[in-house]
Length: 263
Image 1 (cartoon, rainbow, N blue to C red):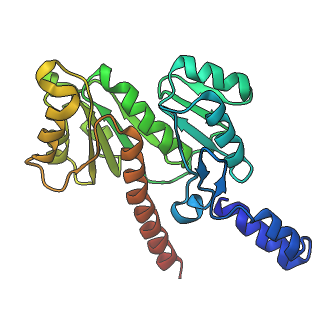
Image 2 (spheres, rainbow, N blue to C red):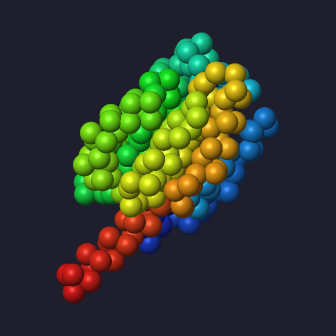
Image 3 (cartoon, one colour):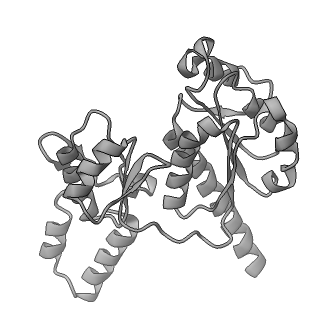
């Protein structure tokens, strides 16, 4: 159950519109619902602010649909990640109201929220076009949290002038996610230029010696630019949630500063 729905339920109890017994029935599945093949974490949004995400590989279409339907009982928006076209087609037959976001390889159950006006912007950057699917996964989860996203794709070090031409744009972002395969050098360059947090995502793009993302992962871990956060190979989802934790801290700071100015 998300925070807004729980708060609404508590308010209805306080007004006497809902009995404590009825409220207890609503909350009976906290902190999780046992579906037999999965224990659905309905409590996660209360801890982290966002619903549990369904990881599709290894699951059947029926399992994905069942988990999504259970989560949707208490959440307005649920996302299933890493779904290919064939699997998503089977899921959409079971859940016709859902939709497939092919660029991010994700199935979305529910409506995406509006972008929060005035919220800190997150840059999502790629070294090459082949890195875009990982970047789009990241952008989708940021948008699902109402975070404004600024995309800048195909600006790798093989043509560094493409990045340098867009520095003014990048500096408008509070946090920057950089997705890169091959040699994985772009996050170091970006981290040496920008002031804000940089999250590096190694991708499995590259020839044999890239070892399906291991080489860029090691490059990013050994970055000369201090303070770069590195997530796992192809983990756009993990990068988004790392950015969200930072974003929440920035938003809370900005709110405190605004309150001080008012009073």
